[in-house]
Image (cartoon, rainbow, N blue to C red):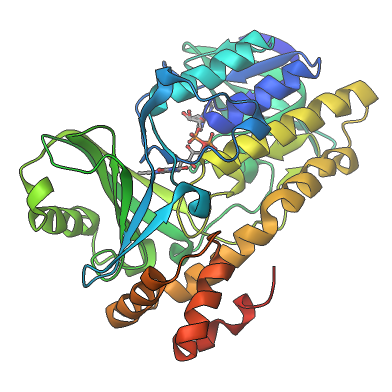
Length: 399
Ligand SMILES: Cc1cc2nc3c(=O)[nH]c(=O)nc-3n(C[C@H](O)[C@H](O)[C@H](O)COP(=O)(O)OP(=O)(O)OC[C@H]3O[C@@H](n4cnc5c(N)ncnc54)[C@H](O)[C@@H]3O)c2cc1C
């Protein structure tokens, strides 16, 4: 049995975990980041689309090492083929850069290491340890050897399949209507327009959408997300995506370089992401945007906030739940309103017919919105077709 003592233990070296480790270490805490896989960032399970808007806030400088493609905007397609073009300034969240995600994750881990964090690969947590109801560390394995890590603060950054929160008694369970099952090919030998990330809406992807995120002239991530509660069978995502690709002249000739399946949460913000000695960040805290399914930005922002609070708690000699709640207040102030609004919008969007999507996109294609949010989109539709958004009245109050 190997035993390690540290101030801050971060479980999971995805973007959220590396950010948390970086900021905990920068704040002077002895920090250990553990990752169950043998290589940070690999295998990639991601569409790799991300905006630049949050990067400065998190101390992330765009780097050619992890930028596969810089896009000008997004094209959103209605079921009838009508298209609305959104530039990066308007869109904020999902467009901007198509990443080399494996390199991106490694670069963030490098930042954590440079800040002073220690890293153990092929090291996983299999349970937490507690004393008087407070989380005091984990047990698990490192390179096959039994491991115990004793920590003053644990940060759960273990992604969508997170167990850390559940072990600590936090309710992170999801309803099937708040999960999208995803499948993605990286397709080579295709024709795509590398200037745009494309989104296709409607019954081709029930409760979700199909995306084409170009990595270059002739390679793109082509994927589908379908609301789990609307899936007919296990192979449904694949058959829906395959059928759609076969109908796209520029894509049908493509061959896959890889195939990934996964899931994203599309739930409303959790009531609690902190308990004695523990904070959850990123996908583990269910901070994915419920409309886009994008979670890298919120993962990084929440990781930074948790890392900072962990360091402050140690400096103050106070790791009580009251102190750690500072983190919960900080992420809520930063993103809760948007997450809640987008969840409410998602609840409505998953029920729309193709006809309504066609009318909404046709309307939006005609207006030039300076800034695109759920609110401004719905407001623009309301002005022309109030009947299309009459059920969404609660989303039409000024944010
Ligand atoms: C198909 C697909 C496409 C997506 N496309 C996009 C997109 O285009 N843009 C976007 O912003 N988001 C996208 N997402 C979501 C995005 O990938 C996640 O939101 C993001 O990875 C969250 O980062 P994280 O650090 O919270 O979790 P993760 O990146 O999942 O990292 C968690 C880490 O914890 C490790 N781990 C888990 N359990 C343990 C354990 N017990 N012990 C030690 N280590 C552990 C895992 O190995 C992993 O490395 C997509 C998701 C999927 C599935």
